[in-house]
Image 1 (cartoon, rainbow, N blue to C red):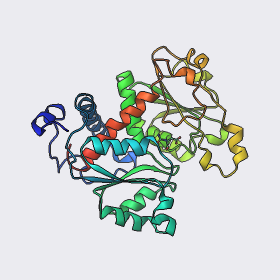
Image 2: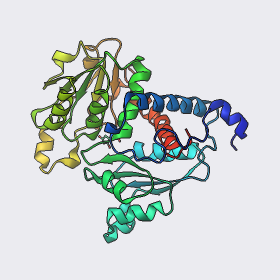
Image 3: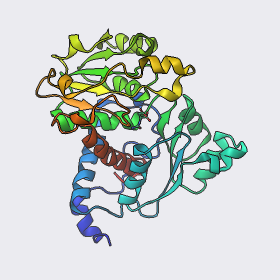
Length: 327
Ligand code: NCD
């Protein structure tokens, strides 16, 4: 049973904000946000965190329905959006196994979107093709939230990554962020680097030659005056790193599996590696990990990846509330 509305508002001072930021909008790319938007989202996410800690669930989105449409595997993104909707009192249509839906009969993405928006108020979409969320948004009337479009973007992950950095280190300006691993196919780092370019940061990219950050992204950020440097080992950047953002080599994006095998174990973070980083820093990973961070590192206070996935719940609650005009 949830608390009476007058008590809920003590924990969540949010009202009907149909003129509010993001109301009725799609969330397709981090490029749509300015720093002011981010501060606003993080403020709402903080309120969500307090609310969950105190009362767990509210009625803010009672009667609203989310369609969670996943054409690619997901644990965290899918279940945190579902939990976010339910903690706000809404409900969820979950489509994980598109092979059991009409997609398997050959239905196009626009038709599937038209179908789901006749039942739901907002659609969260993960799809293997870059640009698919934008295509869905062109054909849809209801807000589309991009939960990963191939190797393109993963904007809600970048928002929760930034929220995590802020929670762990208290600031974003002035930091040096080192991204490690699959910078070519990893959509999380594509979104995160773009979002960080709104702040005064230094970005280091550490990757094997075949997994370097796309040249187009390097150029975009260069044009904005962002300090970026590329390396193939961690050694030169360890002492200056405030945030180490580790990624999984994206096996599913490789056409040639022997090329994957050649780079899959390129970097592994162990307690010995951690001993060479500053005592105050944050080790992050969007997860799932498949060997890039040894489990022995989990007890290191700098290992932030499990807190990071929890923060995803609060950020996604904030986004749903805002898009549906309640924050
Ligand atoms: C990431 C993704 O799907 O891009 N996972 C996630 O959403 N937390 C990272 C990955 O799969 O490696």
